[in-house]
Amino acid sequence: MEFAGVKRNYDRSELIADGIVHGVGLAAALVGVTALIFYAMLWSTTGQLAAAAIYGAGLLATLSISFLYNLYPVSRTKWFLRRFDHSSIFVLIAATYTPFLQRGWEDPFLFAMLIGIWAIAALGVVIKCFFPGRFDRLAILLYLAMGWSGVLAVGPLLSALSATTLVLILIGGIFYSAGVIFHVWERLRFQNAIWHAFVVTGAAVHYSAVLTCLSGQAIS
Image 1 (tube, rainbow, N blue to C red):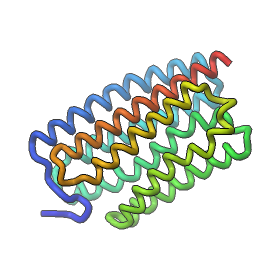
Image 2 (image 1 turned 90 degrees about the vertical axis):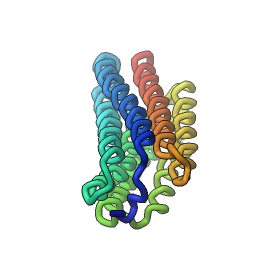
Image 3 (image 1 turned 135 degrees about the vertical axis):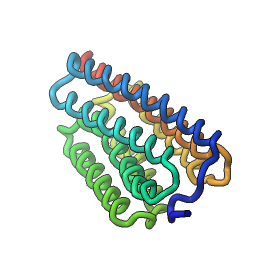
Image 4 (image 1 turned 90 degrees about the horizontal axis):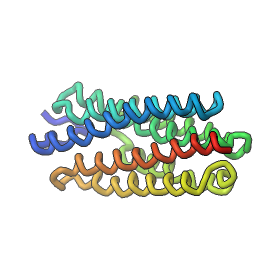
């Protein structure tokens, strides 16, 4: 049986490859987030610790939901899980921005951007949960727009973040954006595993950016 939005069954090799990518990413995230919170407790202010916790929760939730959804057999349950999988991407983008924007939230523009990013994420979650299977192309555009909206904050963040952090944010964004090519290239074998490899790589680079952001807090 085929459900709208759940377009195909992947063969055994594709599922194994996708499972390996997800497993490696989730295991690394569990270790990384644990270390991140530990160092945040040593290095950071209460606000930065809270921002790091929000980021870590968003990262772990997104990878866990994606793992479950993508390896679940095509069924009504998978169609239901799809809502959470696609919603979690909005949450991850907003959660990733949170530690960076928190560093400069004394600036009214950056504070407004932080609120705006989460407002768009909330809108995206509503769209995905209450209108499943609709507006999918719009959602991809929203993902990209949210992700690259950071270019608007580069100027104000120059004094709050190191050059290393800013470069890592850029590189991570490039990995995510390049992966979208494989996300929509549905006829390509191992397309899903390749797309998720880009996601995991982008997430790893952004994790490094958050880590340098926290260490920069300690040094400053």
